[in-house]
Image 1 (cartoon, one colour):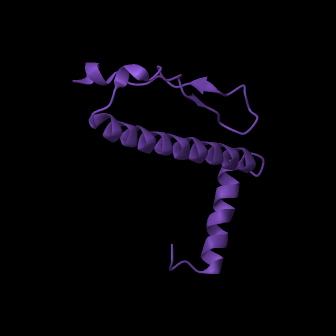
Image 2 (spheres, rainbow, N blue to C red; image 1 turned 180 degrees about the vertical axis):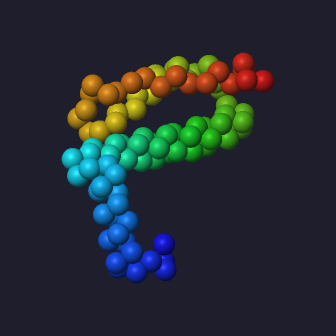
Image 3 (cartoon, rainbow, N blue to C red; image 1 turned 90 degrees about the vertical axis):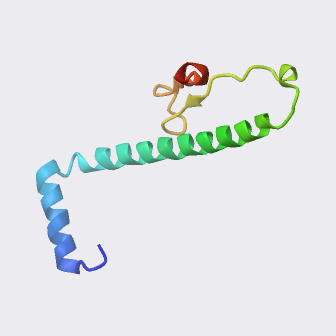
Length: 95
């Protein structure tokens, strides 16, 4: 990408507009943004789960902790129609 000149970028953008149409580009960008937001939240959750696993490896009283509520991914702020519960993988069944 670093060696592209200005006119080459304009040609690429023009081809993209011709292929997908100007009306679909904002929807595609919005979908890409939602996907990136979901990916970022999942990466944070996986990192937090990894830290929790490390903390659980240390001797601690597990019976004192209440069961965790299921996580919900929200695609966009205020968009409750696309919220869905996330099913956690069963780590004992994966063996």
